[in-house]
Length: 107
View 1 (cartoon, rainbow, N blue to C red):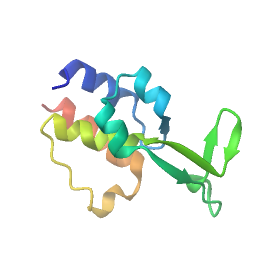
View 2 (cartoon, rainbow, N blue to C red):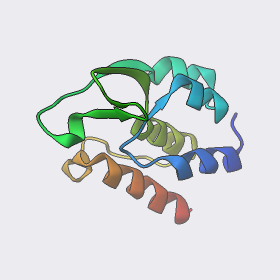
View 3 (cartoon, rainbow, N blue to C red):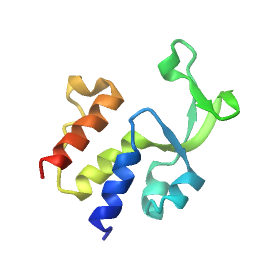
View 4 (tube, rainbow, N blue to C red):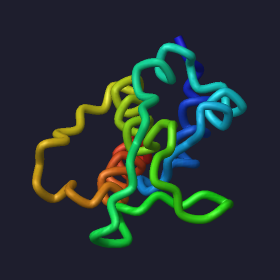
């Protein structure tokens, strides 16, 4: 079981638009099982800026990491918050993460 304060600290870092490197996840003490579950090789799309992956070194074609929106959803589950991720209003990842943060504040 993960301490509530640790879950809240992780959630506070989530924006919905970030991909955390595996090293960043480990530095933030994301459970190894979650890293294994969510880490993936992600590819940039270049049709629009929302699909492009940026790093400190610039644009990359591929990046191995964990989408922070996936972490936020998992954190919500750990906190007992049910989120309907199929709802159309959540097509914007940042909106979904903010909805989770708002639900946590209401607990």
